[in-house]
Length: 637
Image 1 (cartoon, one colour):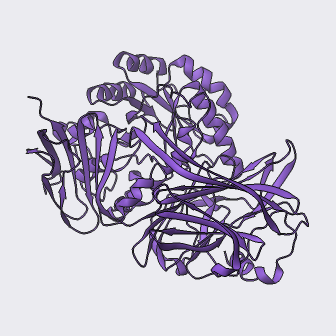
Image 2 (cartoon, one colour):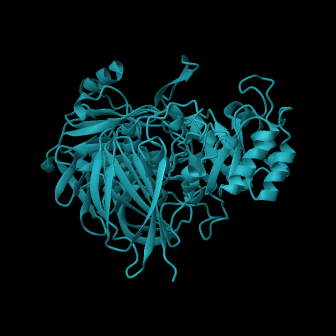
Image 3 (cartoon, one colour):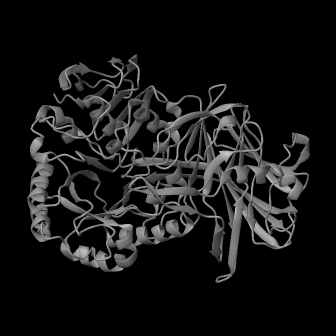
């Protein structure tokens, strides 16, 4: 990191014209120093993206929201190839258009997505290198990417991305990396890289999310402290991979290689005036991804749902299937070990260990309408994916879970994109675990239901973490949180740091079309039926969603609708939370019954019912680390 910062500090002294495309000038320009400015307004006119040439050479952008400057002039660009072509940029042309469509999305937080934006394409030339910068401006968001045409087979190299985010005022960033905890930092004191999406809160209480969409063949880019005050810059991934608490390897991309065209991921900036306003952008990445031609008109039938993980025996598989059928679950999963030790060269994902009669389990699942998902680790996937897909199809398997993938490097992400497409084309639901985070690719590959890329429940997170996640990682898309709800025998081994009612509530707050419930549990131990009744009712995909109240790391209230039934999840952070919320989302002139599941103060669940209607006030009074889960159903006369 010190070497990177030293390089940044001396850039002005040592910058030489050795790059085919270098769009960066580090001097903060005044408005007068930027020429040929193109402005694009959002459809509602409140968000403005401006792009221009600083001193006639380097491309820079800024952003304003409701007449407030959000980003000062910030550099754009890539360093491509080690050629002495200079950095002089000319804008040779441009085009603008408006776009508006409604996207049917039955696998999301809302059944219909409003994809409305204005777009500008700038045609640019840097000496001999032609490229386009494409920018889209949504209500509250901007997105831009770089497109460089190339000849097939002609390898080109990206050695650096110059994209900056020069904030107009001081801000706090919620720093995290991989599956770590979150640490709030002043941007100017940031001492580590921060993953995308990154959430910031400015001095004047604007909430900002910086992210990326459609990362198929790039690298896991991260944010670092920039050279200027209140500035963030992009850096290529540097990640340390641990095995058994020991450093196994350091994965790093110092350069990126491309054959033919270069299309960068979208870089996004979204602005809200409240923490809950950030939820408006939680499906932005989906909107930016172009679907495959085969799914552009109509999605294939994909079955979302809930799963329980089986132990590695036939009887556990059968028991889990019976439990799943009785509790409105759709899947069971055999996790690591069903085909032997993970990293031994003798492990074979085509052969089942003797303790599991896989045909018997799958057959029982088909009788009960329950699918079987199988875990396969990265080593086996790389060596045998093309073999196991038709094999598992012949077995009757419903889905796969990828384990220990490389979601960090260009090579790993490129392989994953190919693998996801193969699994999607074969019709298996897919869950990708470990360090992989979504960038909207489920729009292209709808069988990709969820992924990890999160510090989940198996790591026993505290209530600060659980109430930070809705405003940070979940802005990227679905996450498999692997819920670890305690059993009725109180023999559960994990150290759960939030209440039982909060565990229920988080299945509404956290979005994932495939939810893993009772992660470490034995189904025969869950005899506490009244406690776990909520899990039976809650769906995993939604017709409509609203964030009702929330502050980062303090509390969160989310309402979601499936059909005519509403679900509300309320969760408190590390302090008590009291608030009144109007039920204005309900249908007028209709009577409802609210069934409320809450903590009883004795490490169990209290259930009560009350009549409600549109406009009624819901009084929230939750102790620290507690929660409340609510089902609101219409009364049928």
